[in-house]
Image (cartoon, rainbow, N blue to C red; front, side, top):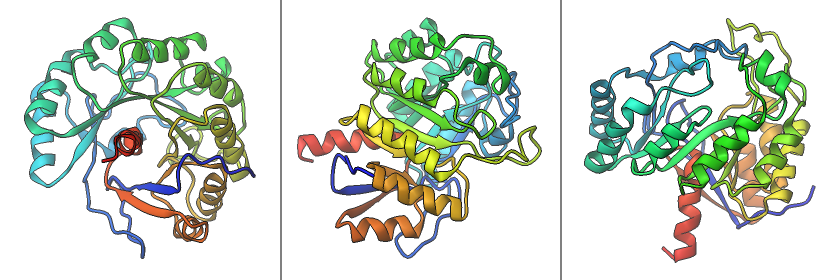
Length: 311
């Protein structure tokens, strides 16, 4: 497998959402937590999630609650947060009324703020221009069958490409995610999703993988293989050689994770969230240095910019 990595540093991300304790690094709990602006509610009821991922987040359904949650994060020594939530039926996360609060958080608390937007529409793209967010994230799906059957979204694939354009045209840092194996553990649309991103200028690209969650319709679905994840990762690297590329936190655990991490490293990723010890050992064997960050992996682009400036 070709190694087209952009640098000789492996950036490792441990935001503290889950416990991480290895000989290489020990994370601080809740250093960069997720906040759900809808609590546990989601109107899409996606088959792979059913709101289970929202249960792990801090609920904050009003501007006041969002600001106070961030005050507590700052007080506890946190460096930032992910502002997320359940989706509306149109695939967007209801953020519009919270943008002034997000801007206030950035200005008054000096926290890094990453926003999970869901599908992007002109109103939220315009509002986010002056909010000063550090990154906007959303999933990119390349198969209409997957969007409809798994996400329950009544839209065509062009909606995902339009979301990218709306953000990048306004110079908002956009970090799309590709979920490998989202179509019931099979590859369907990933090639189209990668090609879609390659037509644009994403600030960074994150590859994640479907992992079955308990108490969801897909809990018994076999995830895709580490080799399939590696194929998609390598395609991203080859088609977007100058774009920061990461293996994100969502992926199956155990031996599956170890193999996935190793293959992703050999495919040329610049960073890995919650890396396995085996991946860190391999990075050292390859002569790479390892740098840990207690924040969301979507912020690798800031590290890349600082290196260009020589900071």
